[in-house]
Image 1 (tube, rainbow, N blue to C red):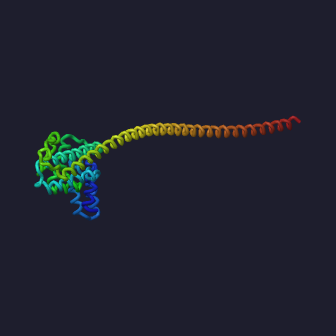
Image 2: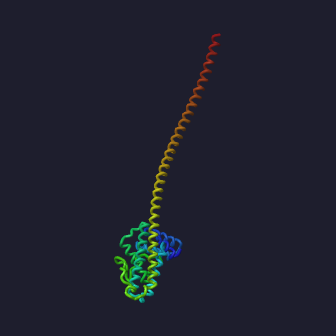
Image 3: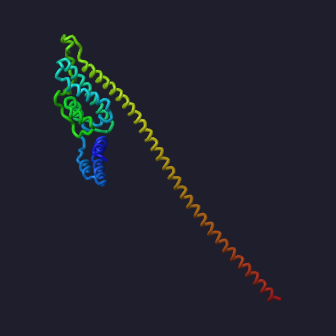
Length: 286
């Protein structure tokens, strides 16, 4: 057992199970003689809902998180060289990418029974956007061990209201060239992500239909099982009563047989007495 492994396990759990699991693992470490690890485990904090959603996105949708982390790296490298048009283009792509991830996070949370409020969604968006400007934030997100939402700094936020308007870019302003290859690449990735999110939502919807049908079948099977169990219990009761009745009949038959044997013996004794009396009478009369 090591701290990283324990953290991976704990931060992958539903938030409601975190405290009990953490305490159990701390007790286990202490029982194994590692008091330092036990204290480190006990110091791990339960994640907020937004942090928990971000952690689950990293674990279950790594392929969708990677473009965000890559975009952050590229933005930090080329930020100083971008003109206004290219910056607007990248800001719009950033909005699409982050919005798709927030939407996916909300769907993930709903599927896990988490209450994802508007405030939680905004905190998740801020966490994702923070990774674009701050490498430490990006590293924290990638670890999947967040306990609190991250805050935006550096590039600002593209989350205020609607996505950035499609104002004239450098091409519209007469620069002549197209937007940067970086912008095109990011836009393609953002659109691909949005398509994957739509596909995932469709799959999730189908899964929910299948889940509901399976739950209906389970309820029906449970009712049938309950009815069968009740029928078996009734049959067992009837069998018990039949056994008791048979036992009473056997006892009655044994009693009647004993009475019959006793009566037969007494009858034989009476017959013998009668015969002896007759013989005695005959002797006296001769």
